[in-house]
Image 1 (cartoon, rainbow, N blue to C red):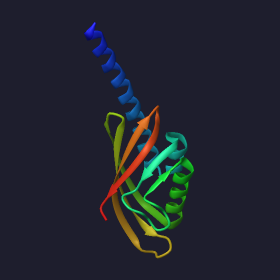
Image 2: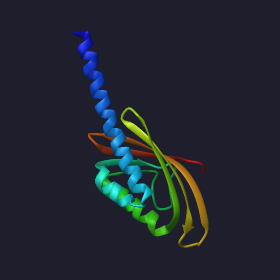
Image 3: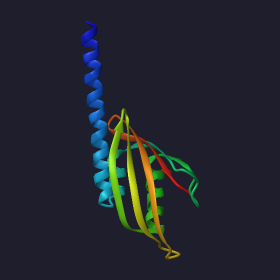
Image 4: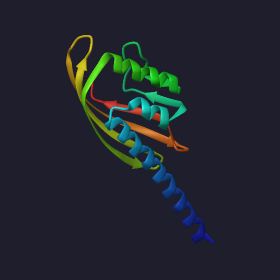
Length: 138
């Protein structure tokens, strides 16, 4: 009887892990093509929580709700022109996965070039991303 319970737990964990991996792969695919808004529309929970490493001008460090996340991304796109973005991952662990981003571009207002690297940590529940956290050097 005990053996059957552990086999069931193992099967559940594998199917959950494969779901997390599938969501991660889809996110990487969208972001690699610069289709971040499509990723948000199809992969994010309505109740998503987003946590940046710090407050940004006009944007708090933590946001919640899909509309706030859409607005954050629209603001980023309006202020920055990304010329290249390398996306690597997903690197999965339980109900989470991480993605490494390396990008270059310029600020539209100042014309100043930038290069940046960050890691996004995403938590998945019921096939949707419920939390994203970003880590980067400052």
